[in-house]
Amino acid sequence: MRRVTRDVLATLEWRIPSWLAYWGAVGLCLFGWSIAALVWAYQIYTGLHITGLRHPVMWGAYITSFVFWIGIAHSGTLISAILFLLRAHWRTTLARAAETMTIVAVMTAGIFPILHLGRAWLFYWLVPYPNERGLWVNFASPLIWDATAVGTYFVVSVLFWFLALIPDFAVVRDHSRGWRRWIFERLALGWTGTAAEWRHFRTAYTLLAALIAVLVVSVHSIVSWDFAVAVVPGWHSTIFAPYFVVGAIFSGLAMLLTLMVPGRFLLEIKDYV
Image 1 (cartoon, rainbow, N blue to C red):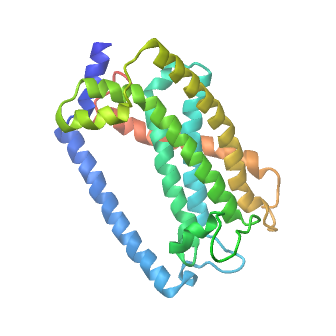
Image 2: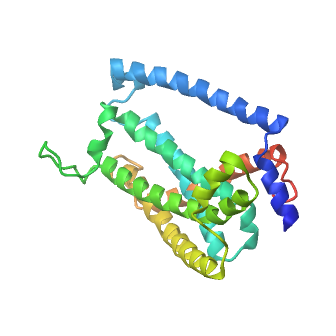
C-alpha cells in the first residue's frame, strides 16, 4: 500500500516529460480559446446568420456539439457509478479519470446553448426566478429542459466526484508541506479515516451512485427530446431516448480510452492502469 501511495503521489511532482506535455496542452487550449473568442465576437457583432442557422436548420453545429459533449459527460460518471454498484474493484483504475472527464464535458456542453442565444450575456433568463420584468420562462422550450437537466446533473456529478476525492485529499495532506498542505487540509474537510467516517462515506457514496445511474438515463432522454419533439421526418420518434443513451456510452468509453492510454505513460502509472 505504501508503494501505491508513493507512486501515485509522485504524479503530483513536476517532471520534464509530464511538465512539457501539460503546459504544451495548456498553451494549445489557450490558443484555441483565443480563436474561438474572436469568432464568437464576430458572430455577436454580425448576427447568427453567419453560422448558417436558418429555417429549418435552427441549431446546426451547435446542437451537434452539445449532444457530443453531453454524451461524453453522461457516460463518464455512469461508468464509474455502475461499476461501483456492481462492486467491480478494478474500477479504481479509471474512476477518477471518468468522473473528472464528466465535469469538464458538462461545462463544455453548457457553452453551446449559450452560444446559440442571440444575446448570450442574458443566459440567466433561462432560469425560472422572480424578476422585475414580470415574465416567466417558457417551459415548453427545449432550452429550458436542457438548462434544468444539465444543471441538475452537473451538481450531482460534482458532489459524486468531490466526495470520492476526500480520502485522497487527506492522504496528499499528510504527505505535503507548506502551501500545498494548507490547500489539501481545506479540501479534506477534516478527514481522519475513522470507522464512523468510512461508514458514512460509503452510505453517501452509494446513494449518489444510485441517483446518478437514474439521472444519466433521464437527463440524456431529455436531451434527445430536443430532436424528438420536432416535426421533422426521421426525428419525431420514440426511439431517440434509448438511442441517445446507448450512443453516449460508446462515445464516453472512446473518450475515456483517449485520455487513459496516453495518461498512463505520461504519468508513469502503467503498473496501476
